[in-house]
Length: 223
Ligand SMILES: C[S@@+](CC[C@H](N)C(=O)[O-])C[C@H]1O[C@@H](n2cnc3c(N)ncnc32)[C@H](O)[C@@H]1O
Image (cartoon, rainbow, N blue to C red; front, top):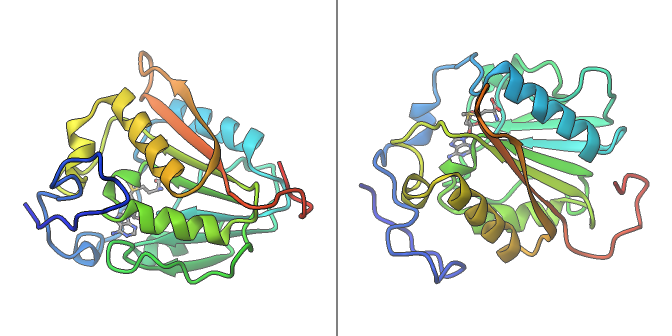
């Protein structure tokens, strides 16, 4: 187990909450491209339908912790889709991305993006790998325009050796409460949890959403 960088943003979490079994370099873990999907077709369909409702058409989107698929509706045009991930080959294979960058957020949580430059953001089946969720989500709140939506989705699968200890200790309901806590502490507003699939006939899928803080109503893309 790796040493836990205690995070004063979450005094209610136990010591070791952000430790991982595999403390090895994430860049090495993600060095080989994985051109696979991490949730099944029905769960992806539910997420795509949700994105259609919540993400502003024509807006600039940030797909944080992405890969070769972004699960966006094919027939909706977005102004820009910025993709971030750990593997350049995966991002290059993603047809929705108009810009791409690779960055280990556990080493450097500061996003190389302008303040209030993004109209919506997504993190799909990846939040469990963040060791510094407060730093990442606080900076994400900075790059989002006030009122812009963030959707964090998760299922019941993960690379267990790379997921943080608190994630491994919780069930689906606990995961939702944890992600809500992450968003609340980062200043997001209007936090809601949506159970998109119970997992009876497909992979389970939950989405926690929030709106970026600040004065809203200024831009053309307020959803
Ligand atoms: C299960 S994949 C999900 C990929 C994509 N969002 C999808 O829906 O298929 C987990 C992703 O988390 C991201 N990730 C994992 N560890 C990371 C880290 N230390 N820093 C930044 N991103 C990381 C990588 O982009 C990786 O592809």
